[in-house]
Length: 263
Image (cartoon, rainbow, N blue to C red; front, side, top):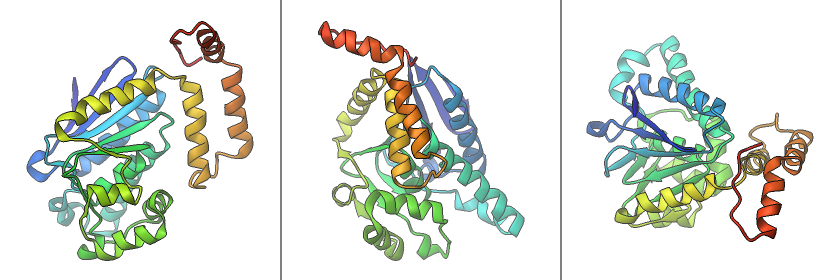
């Protein structure tokens, strides 16, 4: 296992994991952690051996409680500092959102502020019953960027997003699932095994097919205008021309489990 600051990064087979570990502050992200997170998702995009990512928080009490506010006076008190800090956060979040490999947020306990922002950038969110969600920007006098607002609106709709942003209130796991913020709620003692099994089911499937599906999903929200219909059609055609497609057809006919290599 490699440790980048307080990000614990590991990889086994086709599955990569990032653990946000700053437990004394409920896994709040420092500026250095934001910067290194951005570095890591860029690396994952280029690593052809990686097919999926699991993102989680250290311990059982928090997924992530947003940015480490104790740094704000030092790093976010000038126009230049605010711009530099915001650039690091945007790079991390946008890199995760644009990662053309499935990402799963495993959420235990508190998930607030930037924690929700990061979770929303993942494709799937699986939480424990004690998970709590909030974006308290209005209680802190913070502005929330358009990209982050749009991603939340795309996921849960503008009415629910307005509720979250305007009130800053804590939302329980069941309410989060009802509004579409969470895909599933799993008991704390079962969530690790559940998420691992879920991720392994993903990495066993054809990478090109998943990549094309993810691109189409992202394009649906119109958040990534560079994914034109022609580009999406090109990605779909690449699936039909791939060795994985041939292997999948052959395995289906023979009632066997295909082994995909992403080509």
